[in-house]
Image (cartoon, rainbow, N blue to C red; front, top):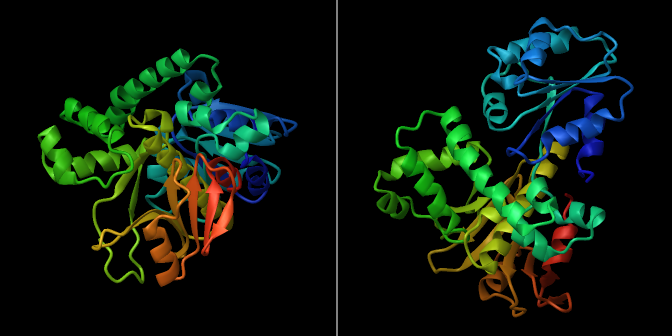
Length: 372
């Protein structure tokens, strides 16, 4: 399946190095290899492979290599300075693509030895636009399977479930423990399970801490680790120019919608969340515009599911519903009071229309119209 980001990554490679980051098993290597097919001579090296590791350490690739792909390079000691040296001394015709998941993204953010030498692209799960362009599959399958390539593309739902069981086990037993030493393995496992049941609701650190039997700050630490590993992402309240908004209790969503343990409404909200995040990441990575996905909740209990923010300004407020075509009162309130563009995304909607300044959109069409 062709990924929407492929063309701009190829373009960016002609100017700088490109880093592709994203969740484990989301398709980073597949995308890199698809890009390599457009080059006369390319080389893929994975630092986890001992033979490849030796080649990397000795820089023993041929000078006429047109595309050099380095995977998991962040596991190499002093990798930033190594990569800086490789980039600064490479032949003018050689292009460099670096792929990796959590640690690459975390380490990229520390230090500036590579400043000005790379573009970053975050790869997310399959989007509705990618799926419809390639397979014609419908929204229900994406809600059930999530957008990660293997569970979405397998024929059997049982095989998708088996993949997810192994995926979660691998995340907890390998990725989390490799990322940071955790003394209470059971506690972070229980935290993850509780979050799977609370998608779409504001998360109280104190409440989760009581259930896990640990301190609220410990729960915050666990969630930060889960975020760093691209397992969950946090959506915090938007407050600029909203005089009485609350500044606490974020919502937590999963990159893999299939991990959500809730009803169809919770899965739909999670799918919209990850789709909006992917769209905003695309804007930030390709256009250099600072973007974030937020929520909105006031002391008067007026609440909006999502606020799409660019350069700290609200661009669109979004409410998600399974079947209700009546405009949500809070959506109408914020649309009128703060002149915010508003859309209500409804899964089961027969006719799209404008109602008193608010767009009513079919979920499948709305998601397909996003950039990615």
